[in-house]
Image 1 (spheres, rainbow, N blue to C red):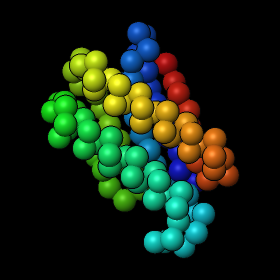
Image 2 (image 1 turned 120 degrees about the horizontal axis):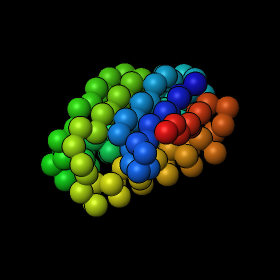
Image 3 (image 1 turned 45 degrees about the horizontal axis):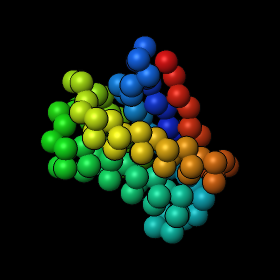
Length: 105
């Protein structure tokens, strides 16, 4: 099971995001749900660090993305982050047996 937890501050902005686990939908290398989660996670990090040059703290390993927003984000960085959240919500809606999405304030 892939678990996504989005933590928002009192203004509704994302300040931490965690993605953990494996879908287990198919054998390693053939699991399209895990592939989708990995693609979303890696693209988020590339968008924030390479395109926007946003200062973030993150850990990206096999089955883990742990992202901390340490500074105020630009409007475009917030858009990238919110788009990622929408992508994961959609993945959880599409594959509810394999993905859980939760937001906390």
